[in-house]
Length: 119
Image (cartoon, rainbow, N blue to C red; front, top):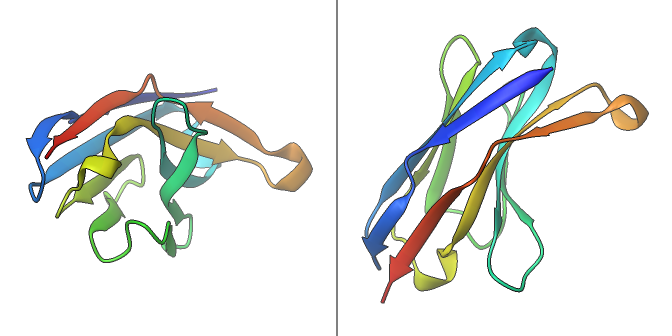
């Protein structure tokens, strides 16, 4: 089991910045990828950014150049630095950790943190 605790959401004006944090506990040694997803009202949950065990990263096209995902040396905390925020970034942001591969993959989710960007 992996437990995830998020922090850092809030209200910010367009053009501003926020940093989200997600701390993992439990069987953290089994995590292969950690990332951030978001879900806006009436929309499906979508991948924002992820960081793989080897340190490689992936971003949604909509956030490239504005958001940066990183992690601490222990690989148990991931951060999402969000700059140049836009109203369309408003959503509940969820931290995700995945263990296993393909058919054995298990996903764990944080409780979600609200990010609201005002115009």
